[in-house]
Structures are given as C-alpha cells and as structure tokens.
Image: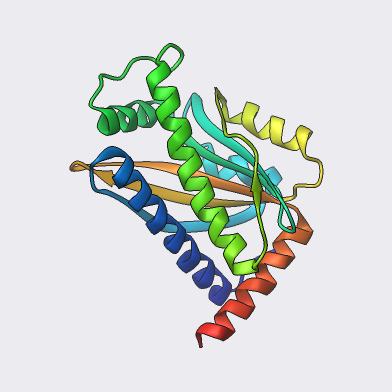
Length: 204
C-alpha cells in the first residue's frame, strides 16, 4: 500500500503540526528551545521495517513503546540509538550521561520524551479522524532492533504496515536524530488515508 504524493505531503504536514506541539511541550519541560524537524516519512510493510532502520541504528537501541487503541489502533515507538539517547538526556537535564542500563534519570527523561512525541502525533491523527485515541502507559526498553520488531510481530498479529518518521532534534546548538515508528493494520491505514483525503479537500 503506497501513499500518493498528495497523501504523503498531507501526512508530512500533519506530523509537522504534531511535532510543533511536541517541541513546545519539550521546551516548556526543559527550559530550552527545542526544534523538531520532519525531513522524511516512509510507509512500508512491517516485514521491511528493518531494511529501512537497520542502516541507521546500530547495536542495541532505546525504544519507548506505546499501544494505542480506538477506531485507529496499533503500536507506536520512538527509537533512538544509545549514543543519541545519552546525548539527548545530557542536553535536556545538564546531567552527565551514564550507560542507559544503570542511568535511571535518562530512562525517565526518554520515557517522557517518547510519551510527549507519540501523544502529539497520534493525538493529531485522532483530531483529524475526529475520534478518541486511547494510549497505554509508555514502556522503555533496551534491546536490538530485531528484538523490537519480533515483539511487535508476535504480539499484534493484525499489524501490517509501518509508518517511519525520521525525526531531527535540534537544541542547544546540537543536532541528533531518532525515528518515530507507527505500526498499523490495513483497516486503520485505510481510515487514515480516507481522513487525509477529506482533510485535503477541506484545506483546498
């Protein structure tokens, strides 16, 4: 299932709106100006997700995972390599970065960042669809990319497609990247596309 160029543009615009809200929330939380850019969005079958992410994240990664439910349902993850996760924590808290396995402060900060980002984007989808989207409590894990993909595939058999958003963070003269991954079933994708088309018509 491929998006048309117009649908891709509309989706990028919507995620930019969500990221704008997330950046404002992060700035308020940290006292620093935070910018979030959305340079690229890719949709692919869940089986191909690793093809897109594997060259970009190495070794173990930190992921904040939330399940969302409602008329549109699926899994949402913020994925950062451990180096980016440590830098982001240090920039946001002014505390030295420790290995994530033992750095409780970093885990709390990353979970909150993931919660803000995921809720901002999925909340924008909910507003677009004019439906209520419910969220599970966010969960942070440290594992390989293959482990993450396996847990999604095994845990939620109805999920078929991954929407991958390349997210660039800019704060305090530093820049680093992460990936927002939204995994959806066919019915949810179709509802989202129909809503995008309605939204495009309303904007015309």
